[in-house]
Every structure is written in C-alpha cells, then in structure tokens.
Length: 73
Image (cartoon, rainbow, N blue to C red):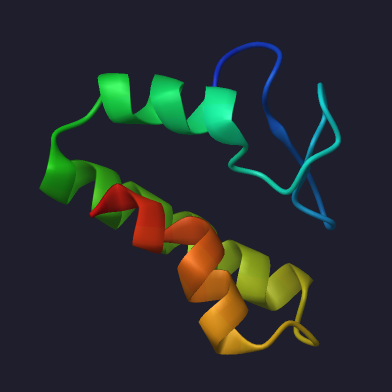
C-alpha cells in the first residue's frame, strides 16, 4: 500500500515521488492511517520498514524505526 496516487515511495531511496521528502511523508501518513486500524497500520509499515532496510542497508535501524513505525503509535 502507498500513500495515494501522488505520494508513493521511489525505491531504492524511499523518498516520496511527489514531494521528495522521506516516505512516508505527512500526506502519505494521513492516507495510510485513514485506510487501516492502528495494529494493521503498524503491520503494513513494518513490512515497508523491512523492504527499506534491504534497499538502504547503510541506514541505522533506529532511523528506520522512527521513519516507518514511530508515527503509527
């Protein structure tokens, strides 16, 4: 799942295709949160975190956690 037609991740950087900010950007977060319950959202974002970790192995795990999961709480 992505953050709508405009706000999708560009891999392997995981920056937003529309605004260039790290994905999930705020518009993508709103879209994702609107389409899932809290637990389902966290599970979906965990899957994205795992994919991003493979694409960006140099990124420290705490940064990935903050980017992909912290906002789902």
